[in-house]
Length: 495
Ligand code: ADP
Ligand code: GLC
Image (cartoon, rainbow, N blue to C red; front, side, top):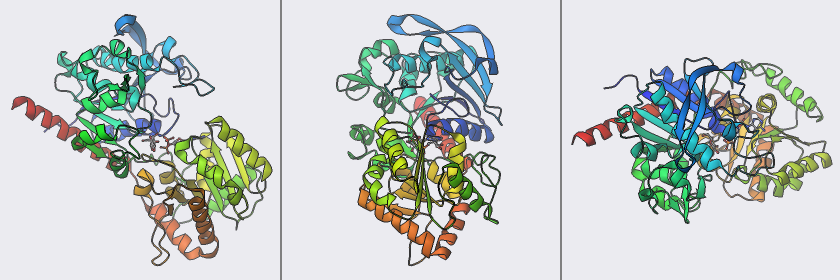
């Protein structure tokens, strides 16, 4: 039995180098946890404009990446490590593709038109890096549509290379909504062969669908919670791929994400006004007061303060918050929102904050510091997502003793247990219908519990703070899948 696996981990973003969402948190933490289990992990990602070259080690010689009709393009290669670990990260440097202000889209939110070429380039470059550093991966682990062509590239272009002869591929779906759907000409750039352009592999609505092809070709497919693994097999959550996923469900697994507690821990958090922990939670009220002051809200200890941090996109339920806002604004509660994304939402929530400045505040933008302050200073955390593959903020909230109010979907449903008034059990508040009324009623219920049922609230808070979502546990689940997949492929080959 193999001990340390060689794992080539490819992602379009990873903390602390580049982040737009939870994928970056996972790509920064999972490789570290896998390395902690004794595996040898190399991470591959782009060198975006914002990643300072001078902070990286430059590796000699350009990296040639064949791009079909575009010929061979030559990339620079840089290296660093994930802080606090020995995990090497290789950065693909190609100014024309990655030297832009956004990761996937321009400032106005329009996706870059050459995203197909950009991410085919990244994915092929990952194989070229392995060749260059003579790293023979047992596992290629790719993430979301950006790198989803890796399994098919492995089977077609790279299987002939001895370095990859025993390699198996694992694809993790962090979000099925984004599939990488492009003009079919991208098949030529990917150089995977037109025989794979068929309705069971790459083809979808006469275009090329990266994720669909990846699901077909991968040796194992995972997603980031059990519930979401089940949901994506249904038309409601399948974004048109539910049938395709059902056809491959024998190799589909759900593994919930972990949390990097070295970063998200109220006992050590450097961003918050006072540190606190389960044994002495008194610092939390100081965090609340500072948050109120920072956002210009009246400093009232007894009023329930509800936080929201997230991308302003439909997925996050901002539409139902907006539809419920007038009613919410009339509750005796305070709301603090942090996020950016769709322009209507940025304008709408800022306007509301101007109208109800006594109990509603919104900061449009991205701020690590404010995200931590909101987790610590809020009493309740709102996540009314329409769908949520895993969700990280509700798990951070638990650790900070900030009880989540969530819609029961995907990872939110798996990680949050509804308050049961009869038994006192639970670690948060759930609602089921994606409607403004259901959201409002549940926010009100949570506020009433905070105000009038202090013992029950405190008991839930304790339970929430005790729960642990360690990456080690999740990494072990990935390890099982890696090993099973690796050995079953090996066995099949020798049969
Ligand atoms: P998703 O990946 O769908 O955006 P997750 O809950 O998995 O959702 O992860 C979101 C991550 O991005 C969390 O770490 C969250 O704190 C962070 N985040 C989102 N928006 C902001 C923001 N405006 N400022 C700071 N952090 C943010
Ligand atoms: C996606 C999902 C989110 C998940 C994250 C990390 O962006 O929207 O639910 O937590 O990926 O897996």
